[in-house]
Length: 81
View 1 (cartoon, rainbow, N blue to C red):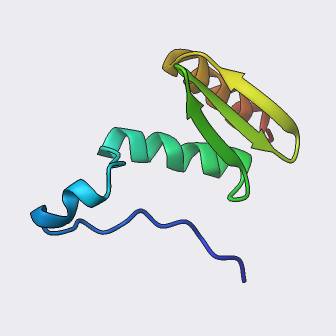
View 2 (tube, rainbow, N blue to C red; view 1 turned 120 degrees about the horizontal axis):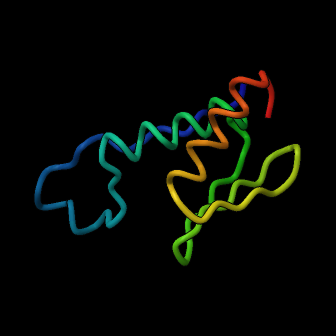
C-alpha cells in the first residue's frame, strides 16, 4: 500500500510560524486535481511563477493558472494524461 500525501492539520496559533507553507482551499483543490489527473506519484514543483509536473509521461511546465486548468480539462476529456 502506497503512502498518500496528507496536508497538515491546523496547528495552534503558537505553532503557525513553524510551518510556513499553508495552502488555501482553492490551492488544495488544484493540487488535488493535479494528482487525480497525473497520478499520486507525480512530482509538483512551484518555482519562479511556473508550475512543473513530473509524471510517468514526462515533464510538463505551465506558466499560469489558466494554462494549467485548460491542460487538466483537455486531459480529462481525452481520458488520460
